[in-house]
Length: 143
Image (tube, rainbow, N blue to C red):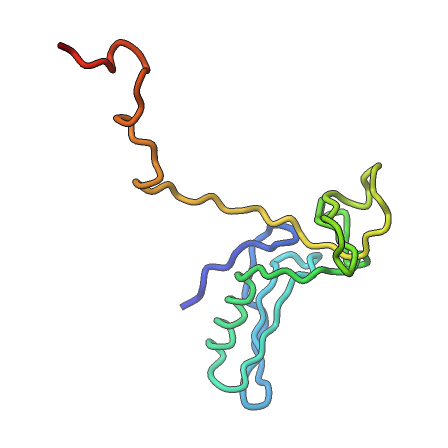
C-alpha cells in the first residue's frame, strides 16, 4: 500500500514515485515532484528487502519534511519566497527572495516555506455553547 505523499515543499505540486532499481543486495527507490522543472527528489536505498519496502522508506523520508538548506545557486524565482540562512546560524532567517528590494545580500542558503496543514477540530477543542454566558436576555435563568 502506498503512503499518501505530501505535496512538493518547493513548488507545491503533487509528488510521485520515481524509478526503482536494484542496488547491491537491495533496492533504490525515489519520490519526487511531478514537475520536470522542479529539482525536488529523494532517493533512498535499502540494503535488503523488496522494491516496495524501498518505496515505503523513500515515501516516509519525503513526508518527514526534515529540511536540508539548499545553496543560493539552487534557488529560482519560480520557488517564490523562502527562508534564507547564513552558516553557521547566528541570526534568524530572512524571509523573502533575492528579488526583494530589501534583500540583505549575504545569505547563502535557503529552505522552502512549508505551509502548515490545518488540524481538524475535535469535540474537546470546540467551544461549547453552554459555556458561553452573558450574551443577552435569552441566556439568563428564569425565576
